[in-house]
Amino acid sequence: MADDAPGAAETPRDPWALEEVGALARETLGERVTTELRALLVAGRLAPGEKLSLRRVAEALGVSMMPVREAVSRLAADGALEVLPGRAVRVPVLTLAQFRELTRLRLVVEGFAAEEAARKVTPDQLARIAAHEAAFRQAASAEAPDPAGAVAANRDLHFALYEAAGMPSLVEMIERLWLKAGPILNLDMRHEPRRLKGGRAMQEHEKLLAALRRGDAVAARAALEADIGAAAAHIEQTGQLGESD
Image 1 (cartoon, rainbow, N blue to C red):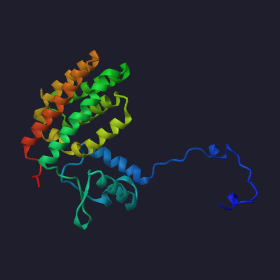
Image 2: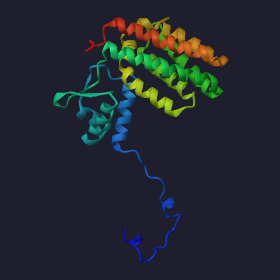
Image 3: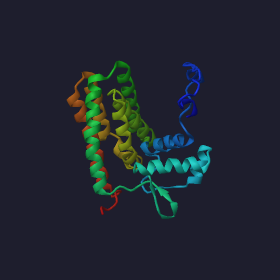
Image 4: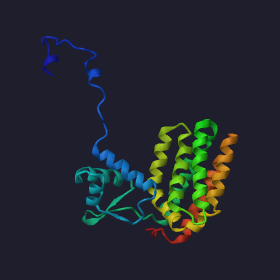
């Protein structure tokens, strides 16, 4: 810059000038749309194979097409959405091999998070996890099970657990796994409400909560892994996975 050139008169600088401007909002419209779509994927509100109308997404969120395209590009880079010929966009259908790989990763990463949570969970965090466990049990054990309520409570319980580990980067890693796993995991739960009542998920959640209360990291991991494993085994039997290449 000219002011930095040799011989240029030094411009007086006010070290506090930038601080007076204040922090700018860094989240763009594209990032906001990405956040909304990520939440839908993690919550299983978008099903495997479901095609998305970018125009409908834009209208629903009250934005133009540009931030929607930006969000889709980001999620496609994460493997959470795929762009088909003709610019069609859909939620990927996992193959059996992809699903098994994803399950193995979840067992390692989420199991570790459960261990850490058992060591670090605070009374307030434990109360939140317990509230989500109770909400799941109520939705799952009702005379007419509430699949949507169970799906929401299950997601909230898991992420309250992972946040209790006190490792934000770990939670971010898990969310990336759930971007791919969420659609089929929660679709299964929504379409099989009878499996909720007295099912393994309810049993393992109870064991997980008991382990957290005892501070038993080994038992917490075992309950979490059993929960993931039982759901994965059931999904493999449903025929909802694509054929491997």
